[in-house]
Length: 155
Image (cartoon, rainbow, N blue to C red; front, side):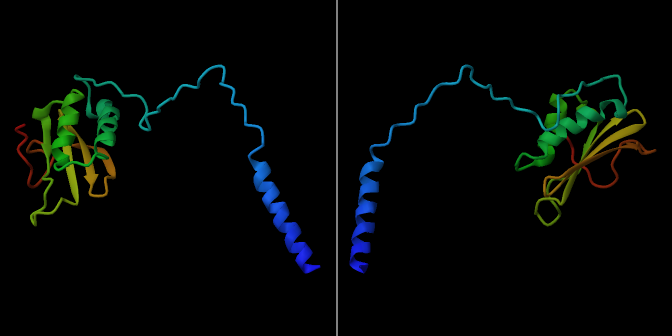
């Protein structure tokens, strides 16, 4: 009886494999209209730049530009941040930037870029993990936005 069951199972398996090739092919019908691929910017539409505006007026564009830029791997993230802001319309002469390299020669834990608008400053900070934060702060009484060592923006 056990031998009969083994033979029956073997015949059933061979038959299933042999008949598997006889199954009708699936019929593919094209869809009536192709679905377009839509790319949505996670930062939303690009805000406007207001050359005569305040730091508060221009913060949405500042955040939009730097939100995209800080995610890019770059040898010099600070330079890339300044370049992107200039391309968006911000005044390079009103900017300050902290070094991208620490005193030990390693990438800086954070890089800060600022843009001064009269008596206020847009401040953007990129962390080593590519996170980003920004704020609007008062300009320093002595001028500028940043205290401490800053880089010359000569490019």
